[in-house]
Figure (cartoon, rainbow, N blue to C red):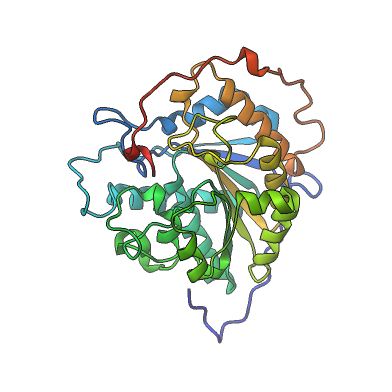
Length: 354
């Protein structure tokens, strides 16, 4: 994203706090499943139900968060999409991204920390648009830390065809792909390659060489684990030292399916809850982190709410640097592995992968 060399660099805006040194969290639901392919011909992805499932576990009360409402997405309707048709539901994804971006801007301008509950990974495009507009305003770049089990870097230059925006959003945000998604409001690219950091991808990710060629900093699970989650969070922040701030994306499928199977595309070799908590806390414990989104949790695979409960507990722990004294003081019920109900067995297909 070119910056005007004649324009003076703006200093970061001061953070407005509702408590000393702490921004209040504002939770906004973004229950869009537009970026995923249908699990079966006659069904829709269940991740649109995630915000409700997480709220049912008292997430807002435990975070002391303001309820910023819900941005309702367009109807999920892939129609007669076929390989070669471009990104499915692209017009609806672009429409939603514009509106989500404006809602995020309002929260940030209030001096709050937006926590966006998705929905699928395509909601990241709304945050990316916000970062680009803020970069134009402030004269300095913003970055993205992308914690995800997949690189989501598929684009026409490295794949025979594209289809689901959630599997392509990093590529789209960096300007790779069809103009109706890469150039919304003439802002292409929303992020520079060098201002994106990926954490938690699997060692066998099919686009890892493309990331390297593009200069996108990334660490796979073995690399993350070898250095430790806390130090990896610090490493990610160092990669973005030239940015005025950054956004945090967390896809629940970064967790190993042994502890979190309730996602649309589980992939072995993920991280543990404790590692995710260290990553989140290490990344949000700075005013440079503007906000965070959580994506791809699917309550359809969590019939008794066990995984929603565990995910909320992990979020509260990870976001502890933002909590004011006295919040999350109540004991959390512990569910032992032997008490867990088996998730509903729903056939998964390759079409589910973003």
